[in-house]
Length: 255
Image (cartoon, rainbow, N blue to C red; front, side):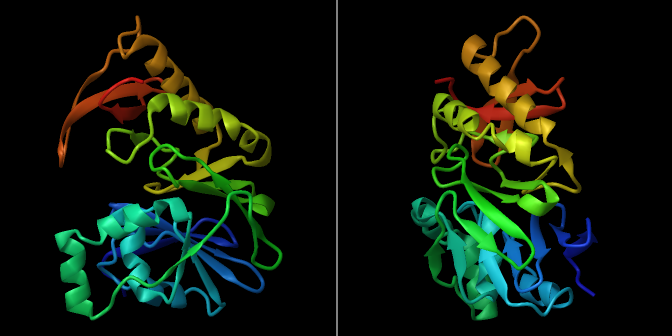
């Protein structure tokens, strides 16, 4: 039915939306309201996809302001985001791809509304707690689905963490912010990040924390972990493996 967005139901209340293997969004359905978490690239109408799954009122929440998490917002009336990331989101809309998408569809980005750190969103029988995690972007947030013990992390905690971008915080700041949310280990069993295909264990939190700590302490020149060059669409940076080499942190400098 849909060419790009593939739907996978993970449990009774949670659906994973895979946008052509490039980005992942989620749908969480309560008794009274549904939450859409990130809207991916916007090439395909994610709102139409959502409406094949639920007819509940929708609240759209963006985990951060990067293009592959907000461009599908054009199919909705409003979106909630940490206001710190609104300038970044608006800068992303200057991308040629987004300008062309808006011209093709006749749509534009809807208004952003603020969502606050430690706010609770009631979906009816299910609650999402907003947990700020500045690092990948200054306004990055996670969402804790309390009743299902699932932590939605956007790009803030994942297996291929980009910290080389201009908008990323210093690694030392990110490390301190990660430590501040250690309580999530007692509240969640699973992580669903912004490029996932299925559940990850909450153990990914500790693996990333250890990886950032190792990078800060060794500068990427530890006895067992050696960094290497990484080419991305905007240049070159460095890769720092963590979690037994299964995951990486991308960075330009260690500070």
